[in-house]
Length: 67
Image (cartoon, rainbow, N blue to C red; front, side, top):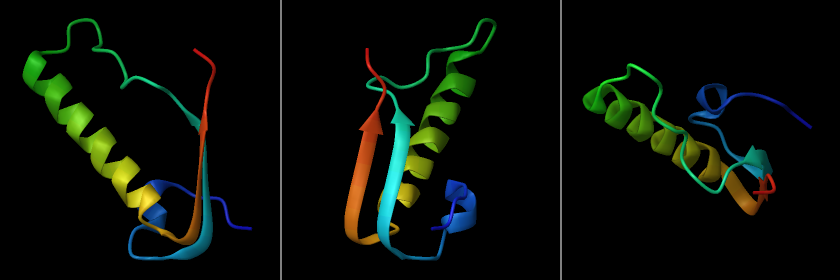
């Protein structure tokens, strides 16, 4: 078993990938955060999720937190 960040996994692949602690909604906009900064942060968030999900060769497990 290896534990790491999305950034460390970039370019690698694994037989199984587990992604626990996901939420049903994207992160909220922070106080005093501009709309453009928030849009950029959401785009980075989505790219990192995509990288994490595409590291799985055979199985991908997504664990969501209760609402």
